[in-house]
Image (cartoon, rainbow, N blue to C red; front, side):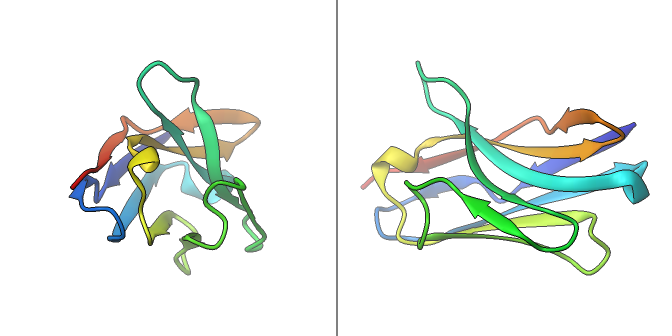
Length: 115
């Protein structure tokens, strides 16, 4: 079992920045990939960025060049640095971890980009 807790969401003006954190606990040594997803009202959940245990990263086209995903040295905390935020980035952001062939999710953190 893996538990994920996100933090760092909030209200920011267009062009601003936020940093999301995702702390994992439980069976942390079996975590392989970690990722951030988001879901806007009335839309499906979509992948924002992912990072493997070895540090390979992947980004959605809509955020590439603005967002950066990383993991700490213990591989149990993932971060999402979000720069040049746009109103269309408004969504609930969810942390995801893959462990033992199963997907685990955090409770989500709201990010609102508005003047």
